[in-house]
Length: 220
Image (tube, rainbow, N blue to C red; front, side, top):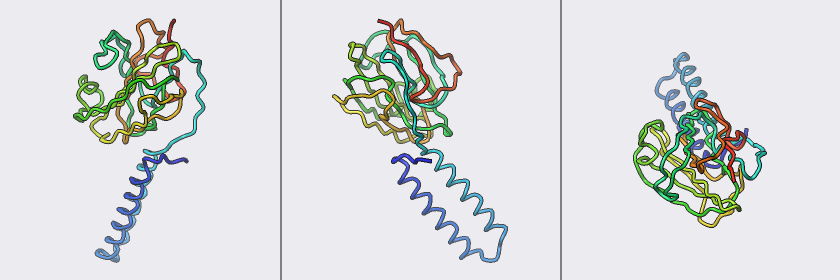
């Protein structure tokens, strides 16, 4: 299993905590085998849980330049027409992917093009499915413009557990569909804003895979 670079520090701290905890149990409570084994099992479960949070599987994205691939693993929780007020300032189709703590937390570019806009917003940590999380939570906004001049906006949104958003995008970057652009620690949500008239290929409640599932197709 490949571990994402964002997990190195967390895993090191986890191992240190487990070592100190087990050493303390042996030193202060010797001769209690049941307690030692209980701590062993809990330590193992904690390590495996943290390990799976930061797994980074290798994938191959297969999509045309007009297809929008899913930016994250998770479940489709929103498909609706809405007003995008931060950058595009027009009507868009919003598709939101909820990432649970057991999902892969890597975020991938949904389409190829040039990064025209990037902004980080500090904010609250409402639960990711809260209606106001998209505008009030800590988040990043990225806009990629395709070679045909179509702009697609996507947004990483922190949740109640996810309190660290990492985004590697910068203005002027060349975005390659399916490549990593960021990471959200311990889950949360990613929103994608598509032009009106895009052909949507998913339904509410669908389980989707980042870099693999085709969310929609842009129409000329």
